[in-house]
Length: 307
Image (cartoon, rainbow, N blue to C red; front, side, top):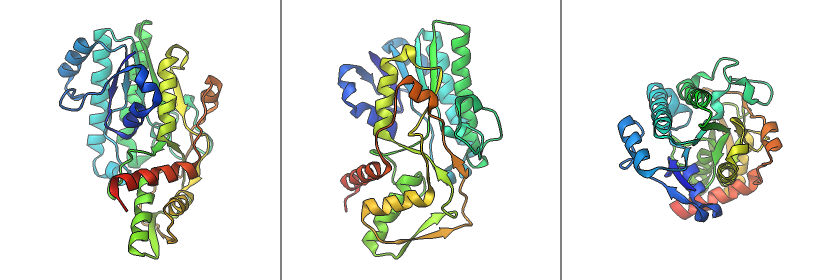
């Protein structure tokens, strides 16, 4: 297959390209200079020139809680424009298969049970990342509408939980939970700190999928695209408290620091777990435990940032 991968330089894109299945296919991995998704005419011209068999849409403006709070307009507008331009250009250029990647923040906030695919738009969104969520919901709906209007278009959306792993972003201001925990634990060990800061009380629950497992799922999805449901959650099917992730990070780093909770900080949803019933019925299951994934993520951190 000739596969166009948007967002190829991100964590999901890099893990996808590193997968053993990649050598059997042709990957188009344009950078921003080659393909500006915010410019519709350039997107259309690129698709007409390259004629991919399938598009994997991973690109997006992403960030942690504080980044979303600080720039809600950018998270809404840029993610909507990227998805809209790509899908509309794909439809116009005759691209029959598109796999759009959403986010579990598309679901209602504080749902007490596992979030099933039918629950989109079933309740209010989490305010701290509402702009990003609205954009992702709109792009998923557009994919569905385009497929509904023309049966030859197989435009589908997968909704992964949060990702972590190789090529994660280890930055104090923009990192997600796992990368932030590893960075804090590493610095505490290096500097001999007695404690590391945790936002909130540590009891909020989160679900994280190892990026290598997500890459494995994406290859299975692309190679079995016709059988893939139109909308599908992707996750390990289990969640942990924020405190448990921090303790796992401390263990992976080999740091004995304590956890200091700052309850004045925003924490987002109290719980966010996606249902994997449809995923397991389709025949896929995540394999990497949080302990193994945390260790492999820290190994990658040391490769890139040193000790």
